[in-house]
Length: 297
Image (cartoon, rainbow, N blue to C red; front, side, top):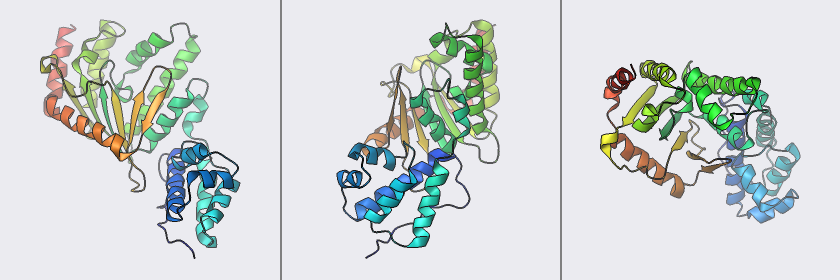
């Protein structure tokens, strides 16, 4: 008996390129597997792989081999030729490189996943403690931040890293612009990264960003004292596709964590909601930034 299932929503190619396509295909494969009550170990055996690889495939974290997808669809009892063709075509599209692949020489593999998620997201909510969020950094400030961790790198590599960051900021413009909600600790705005001139330019850049209708910036002031985000910075990414769960991104020194289980992500959503209450209202952000700018004069 053929298992009934929901088709992936493919009205044209979903934005986000291969990352969101892999996530959509992975979600479909996970749904089919669970409906047939097949374990990840059994699925892995069918494609000569481990259960861990099945988990990575279902999360969209690795590329797909068309043969593996075909074998899994057979194992899951999906015989309808049109449905198989749709999912196999999705597997082929998902293996196409995204624009960020041309930056592979300066893009760590663990951050490559995030750039793809960022490109695919419809809403990004982020809390930053030490730096202005990357999507809101001026070129000069971005250079100063990048130099902190790459002081001995040649100039062409530094320039490539800056170019990558500026390219990511294109998500804030255009008809499919992402909705960005950033909560920034005042410490990030007071710390003189790159010197006073660079910080003046950065604060002016932030003031300009607050005029963008799809960008919301809130500041957690020093006088707030302690607040709910005691664990450090984090980012929550949400997607238009209903099949895709929210993802929480936690960056570490040489790696990153990606959380997508509701029991993990719900806690971060709650903290973010609390932070938005604890921070100064968004309507007051421009004036607050003007005050910081005056202090830099």
